[in-house]
Image (cartoon, rainbow, N blue to C red; front, side, top):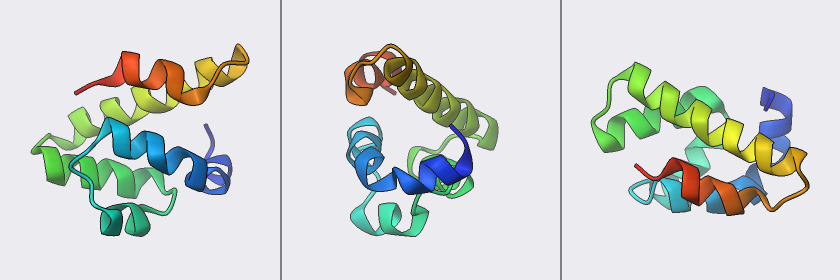
Length: 85
């Protein structure tokens, strides 16, 4: 998912991000505002991961969302199953 699309769909994705990474606060999500690098940083911070681990987790999350969208499914359907930390 490209950065512009991510920002444009942030309100819809925000709930899925919150389900995936429950330690993220509403303030965190407001600060992230659809920016991938900020999401990676917050996941790294809240979960004590390395930058690389957080980056990989975020990338898997977005790829799962893309797969669900490409097959016409609900974005959240596959995200929860594929991405639990």
